[in-house]
Each structure stands twice: as structure tokens, then as C-alpha cells.
Length: 159
Image 1 (cartoon, rainbow, N blue to C red):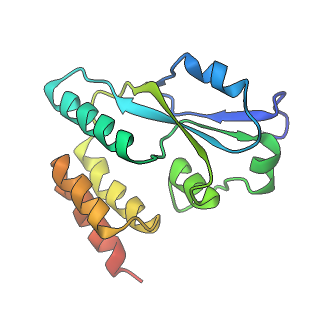
Image 2 (cartoon, one colour):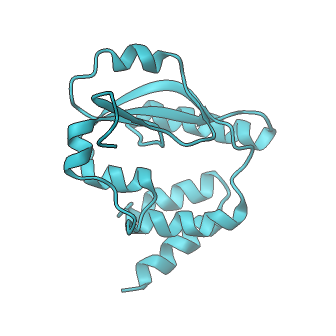
């Protein structure tokens, strides 16, 4: 990262289609981390339900997704390390403590579905990130993903 030419570092997941508005938004970057909304691509009935759920939730609250920009200096002052216990986006959220600007862009996660095998670890990650129980319960129920809640509960029980 220290060899990057730009003063801004844009993090994204490999399977995310970026909204073209991000370039325009980054031109106004003034140092505060910026987070861009990522929605599931509504290519199946189930993904349409998730898309609708995401649209409703992000209209009510500021989210945190896997596409974000941070100044190179800020990142280098407190970088991610190999021994992080959280996913990169969850780790950055904890570092920034909700001090970021949120943009309701139309970036799309092109992954056709989240494998059920990943849901348990997603629940564990939500527990490690300190997500409130009622939010994880609601997420798990609305998206019909009980594995997330089970992973969350198991992680909370462990010291």
C-alpha cells in the first residue's frame, strides 16, 4: 500500500460491480473514510428478496459494505494485519467506529448466492464485531438464514 500512487485507497471485493458514480464521489474526497452501498444482484427470486431487504434497510440506516475508500495516510497509520480475526470490511468498521460517510450507490455483488457453509462463520464474525443480538436475530429471520444466528450464539458463548 505504501507504494500506491494515489492518496486514496479503494477497497473492494473481487465479485462486486462498482457504480460509475464512485469516481465522481472520490473527486470530492476530503479525508473522511467513504463507504459505498453494495446490493445483491436480483437475478433469482431469492436474491430479489435480499435486494428488497437491503434497499429497505439501507434507506433506514447507514450500512457498512465491502466497498470503501480511505486516505492512504490514515490506512498506513492503522493498517490491516495478517492476524486480523475479522473479515477486512468488519475489521475496518471497528477501526473507524462509525466515523465515515455513507453513499447509497448501486454497486452489485455478482456472487449468485452465499453458500450456506459460509453462514455459520458470518454469524461468528457478527459476534466478534459486537453486533447487537436483536440485529443479528432480525437479519437471520428476514433472510431465512438460521445458521447466522447459530454461529453468532456459539461465538458469544466462547470466552
